[in-house]
Image (cartoon, rainbow, N blue to C red):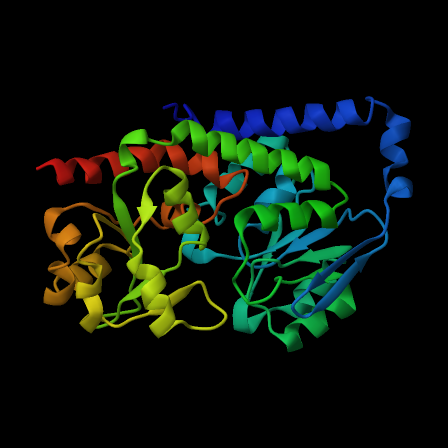
Length: 342
């Protein structure tokens, strides 16, 4: 197994390689770069809320939700604006992999604006975007109409906050006229995950759980990006999750609240993955008897970070988060797996 040596080095290397490839494809010609927009073919992307018709190559990109900013940066289109995510940011005010990548490129950091239910449409309009990318977001039909009046807007395929990680990347690539390059990014991520995969994990099952306060318990589905990342590293989602989905599915999400009273449904999971907002939240949740008695948690076979940037990074699969996350994630999983040997 190989694990990236340096977050900054790996991210920088990926961006340099992509830049080199793009230059080579354009034959290094300034004339080719200048004619890029002229050669752009109109793109139509259908989604749950309508369709985005993009007639010219976007230069001013705005992103909503999660994961789209990173792919745009990797494709050489650093957004002029992005939805703020204070919870996953560090002291720079940005998620660290975004800050590092943009600074390494010597470009201006995206302006940040309020998102979610308090979406600052006026701030977005002032950025004068050519396209708004929101394939992994929760924008409403009303918000979409406002956004689409500003610029072509790409929403989620079917349900809010539901898209496969590779589909998100190629959708963004298509919107930016770089579908082939985006497929290359997907291949590179798959290679990184394959290199980090541990053969010794294959016989272990896991459940990825969450809480929204004392007395609550939820599970993420196998296709949810944070679960997909763990699966790619060699572990197997506990089959019980598909059973729970039948009984507790929440339409429009990749998760289900099953209630703490059903904690024993997870008794056959070899490992538990979860996260906490801070140490206080950790103690509050772990002090609950039903929760603490889940066998994997009782054995210490649990991966449960409370580092907010890491929790966010390990929840998203894209060209910047994967190298940033893997060097820390694999040792954490190794530590939990060792508890199973005792």
